[in-house]
Amino acid sequence: MVWLILGLALWFVSHLMKRVAPGLRAALGEGAGKGVVSLLSILSIYLMVKGFQAADVVVLWSPPAFLTHLNNLLMLLAVFLVNLGYSRGVLRTKIRHPMLTAVKTWAIAHLLVNGDLASVVLFGGLFVWALVDLILVNRQVPVWNRPAPGPVKNDLIYGVVALGVYGMIGWIHNWLGYWPFG
Image (tube, rainbow, N blue to C red):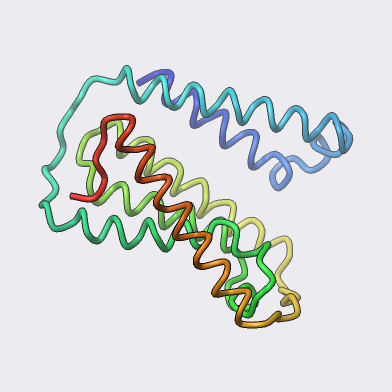
């Protein structure tokens, strides 16, 4: 569990540095700063994965089977939201922080179907990070300049791509030994 918590802490540091310590982040420079954040992010993911895999299974609750379907629906939404800000349709003008909303949705979806302590630490921790980051961003930049909307057909294309990505994520979960579709 120590590696998992260390990985989460590193994730928080690397992803909140710009908001909490902007002077330090600026002192690193644009290129070097992004490099440091990228390296810390990769290391944090590695530590979280290794820590999660090594953690003892401490069951806190046994989720009912029907929550798998809700998880899958929420995961489809999270996959759709994760890069919505980069799409060129109408929907990107409706949600200010689609990526952070995607992380929170992803975390809740996984908390619904995983009732063990390591899952609560991992997914709950990443939910807290996304919430804190969202609050900090909104405080520092209170006014949102909505992007110009594009054609609806771009939303439809983006939706089809997101559905394909969702299918690949399901396939990868199955390949890793976790059948995600109940």
